[in-house]
Image (tube, rainbow, N blue to C red):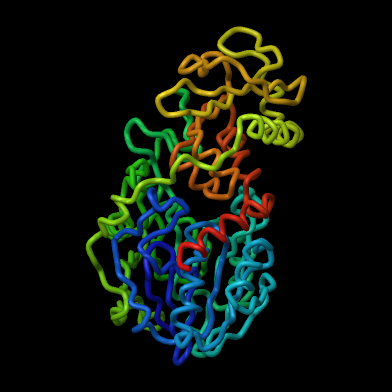
Length: 463
């Protein structure tokens, strides 16, 4: 069995005459806004005409950098001769909106039961999901176990923790211990003066992320998974293979650097990091043949010059408030809302009923501020507070007005928003923070209609 990196977390797996694509993202990058894409690094060119014919496509999640509608539509439309079948295998919790898009593109969806084998040519495939001790937006993500007819096996971790049931199956002998294990490095930090994801604008130390070191990272993504297996395993570090146009995302260490550190310190016998086109033979545990259809290239200048989306959808502030009020009713009955309700004082003074502010930033103008009143369960428009808001309210979100309107219209996904223009402050655990709530509230599982619009826009980009 040969495992080949297509870039970031996309894989080509070959066993004999069988070839499957896992989470294929075959263009230069991904993202809803053509002016602010996330570009795959190292840059590579994928020549689909030279790609070996594909027996099946396997999708582990609908996350933006795994489920790429434009790639799937282009494959079916322009290279149907490269698809031996139109079968796409997905986990049980794959959202209905994403399944509908696959049907629209002409694919046959096969839902795989968790911990049940499915045969694809010479490959036996099995999904694992953790279910517990995982964040909501990672709870529907599956990792993939593959075994060929010679019992050579590969485990590919996706955007979630490795399920305890996988280790239990290996320990019980239900599945052979994998010869090769792909572990995902999702650690990112923000560039100086920037805020991404769940970062806190308040100068409060985060007990989990305040002091991150290369050794601690290696322990979390490499040592801990390997120690749970009773046999030695060859590890491949993957993930973090993209950058945003504005360089707000910073990678402290490349996967190659982490692999080199791990090997030098003899934490494990063998750790690899594969550039696009590079492969690993699961039988010999040695580098395999370089894929001729995936070639390194210089980063395209096109993605640096395209303008961002224009003025945004014509959503009025009245409509924005109506949406926020609907959100408020959901917010306050969740665990996220309990964090707001229990915070009665801030900076030594009582708060009253107003606990959180959303600041819609309109370039060149004062922010448009809405404050959540927990007694009235609605957002109230207030005069612009500007930078003073962070001293007045313990919770807050700042987001570009155009981007927020684009999110409401399905022109941006919430994960993109968190890495393009949204920032926040909070006095609770990061996973109870305002933007953590948005990740759940605007997720594809919860907000399926908005997800459908987003997927359709992706399809329109290749029509």
